[in-house]
Length: 238
Ligand code: HEC
Image 1 (cartoon, protein in one colour):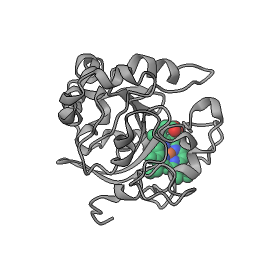
Image 2 (cartoon, protein in one colour; image 1 turned 120 degrees about the horizontal axis):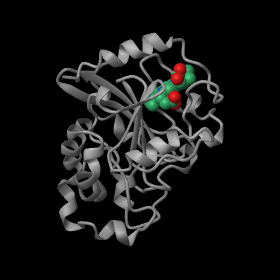
Image 3 (cartoon, protein in one colour; image 1 turned 180 degrees about the vertical axis):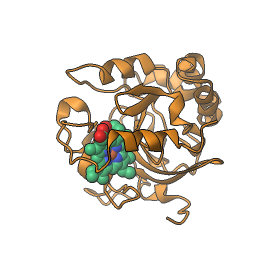
């Protein structure tokens, strides 16, 4: 794929398919965070405050890289430092990933076949859901990847109700780092032309759109060994 610089100006629009949302008027802004939804195309630095406030203090549970990378979205947070999150309890936390926030997936926790972390410091909670035989809802800030080139990121509560607040990403990864090729909810396709939403929406509700095996999604044509090999070959890993 060529380097589409900002596929985000189309993709992040949470309800692009059902409304003719143009991303200039946030479709669902419940709190003061309206600019978050409007600027998911990453043109502006993230207005989210929490990656900086909670990420740096709690991120050590994930890895050194994640804590340093979350500071990239913290640039704009000084003005609202902590206040906004407490003022918008419940929907105040958000994670608007920047390319640098995506790092070597081998440094994250491994659960069955996938890799998981939480860049807002909720990794333990995320692991509890992942390991709960009854399923559950992942906490905001959770990043899950099966292969380096695709990711699901849990956004703020209410960010995209029709996608359980997950943001899908198609990524291009090299030793130099990560490029976001596409991001959004219903319009993101992977390297094989498959639409993320179409498959992941088939997961039964208790699995929070996580497919794995037996959750209702159409299976991927890859063996666990092949998936493991692709993970091990993540070019961003040291
Ligand atoms: C053909 C259907 C299909 C498409 C298209 C698809 N996925 Fe998946 N995805 C799956 C299945 C099935 C699994 C579980 C594979 C396994 O564990 O064997 C999976 C696994 C994952 C996982 C690990 C967690 C989980 O759900 O098991 C992530 C993250 C993920 N996909 C993200 C994406 C993203 C992002 C896209 C689009 C860029 C995408 N997928 C496109 C079917 C699909």
